[in-house]
Length: 512
Image 1 (tube, helix red, strand yellow):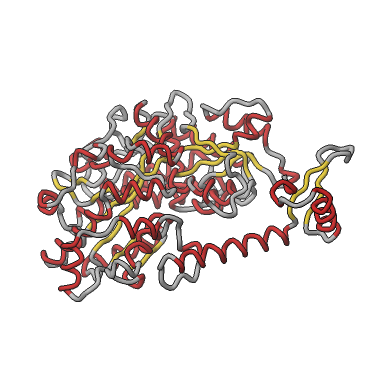
Image 2 (spheres, one colour):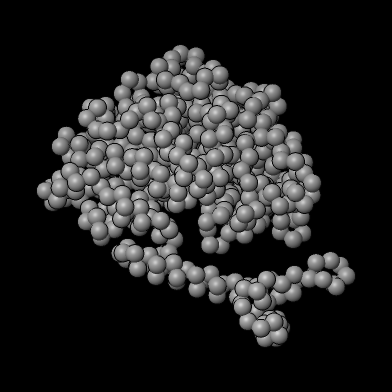
């Protein structure tokens, strides 16, 4: 293959390859114990040199198409500049920004999608604003910044993690968007009802869904095929496959998942409870989505100390046995890195981050990964939780400024913009028109995967209820469940304490 790619005489190529082996640029790795056959693979030095080279090429491409000040190649995503050139903001938005002589300011989540959005907005052809207009933060820090800035905001557009909506809406920190929605061309019926409802509190709309992501499981299809294993559909099958595929002696493990203290392990617990058929609150799980503002009385009672809670903790203990050694410090970024770098055979992951498997320069699993539905627990179901982000407007903005901010939101959430993001490797499709577009569907297997889950009724929104107490529940679970896995508490002690602490919070808030 190397010789064919080089397009030089066979003898010349052979001599060059052997010289590179002698120089240590190419390594020979035995395929069997006899050593008679072997693989050729790049040395760490050659691999590093190639990554440095292609990263420089990427930075040059970013500068060539017009992005300003690209110091880190990871801040540029292929397709972003083309998007900006073809999908221009509506003229009224551009003229209003020019007349106001003041750039819009954005407080957003720090991920691929919002980085691409920032680069698009700041492209010199749009003349809408600069990269300094954007402040990007990871989840825990973003939550703190929202509490810090929303009461007297310097930002025009903010993003919220979907489960946070009730907290900020109840505190009247967000502007209701209903009047703006009626005056613009946002077609509410084009959004999946459960997705649009993620921005609704009571009878008012406080957020526009900008993207959705589904928590599923990624598997190494090459390894499953090689070992003639079927993809896991249950908790027990995950453990069985992990034990067969892992090889700790060479640093290869069964599965990566969120087990770090705080938000990561709390999210895992709630999602796995859903796979056992149990919400963490006393609500009917049969409904696809709820009007969370209407919950009352016993609906707020926690169901943490339950048979399902014990089943989840038992599963988590078994997961630890087939996980990398740093599993109790593993968060979203680390688990994706573990799968990307070929450290594990399986990994729980959000579909937005799964796009990196084929697009990331350093991915070791290109064309080797496949997404499958969430494995179900005992007496449970494959409950694939819907997550994502909403764009909202701080409540303190004057109406004229809020209207201008909503014009920007409407453009960013337009079908054209979303389709361009999908076709450029960012699998977000909260609009029916985008999901049904043949070009968008053909561009990403993730889009097709999510569409199949939707058609089969396997997408859920109730695992992480967006009530005002959500972050408090998350904090309690993040401490107590981690204590159980680290051995500081028994499983029963952890569940009992978590149940009592959440119960105390609910009673203190007058929920029942």
